[in-house]
Length: 174
Image 1 (cartoon, rainbow, N blue to C red):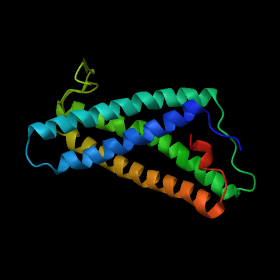
Image 2: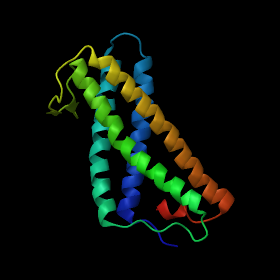
Image 3: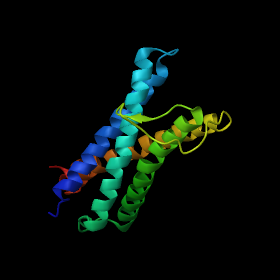
Image 4: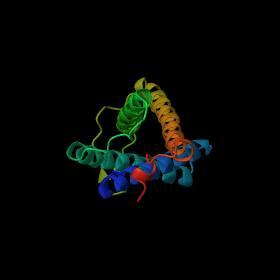
């Protein structure tokens, strides 16, 4: 069995954990009514997670460019290979698009992003009350799209493990 490299596995699972944490924190923080210290803290943490996802994604892309992933298992149908490639490309796109859309939403809202409470990131656009709801919607739609693709990705891995009984999932497990 050809496996992913240990750094690729680490980057994959770290990205997954960060995205899951940001997703559930985003759901939690938006359900808090009014402006409370807890809500503000959760928004900060959510933004920190988003920036971290973006940073890890950059490292992940560089690693992927330098290290070829293992080939699909022998006998895997061509349509599944194409579907897996398409899903992976879409996931990579969303791993960048979701945090960038959230960052632009914060900029349009006039709310600075201060990474880890230490480094204020530059505002890429001026506060814009007209653009703010558009970017909020874009961020939400991209996030829900990512959630759907992540669920399909996980279900496909489980299908390969339990139904096809091939090594697709095992290649990414430490």
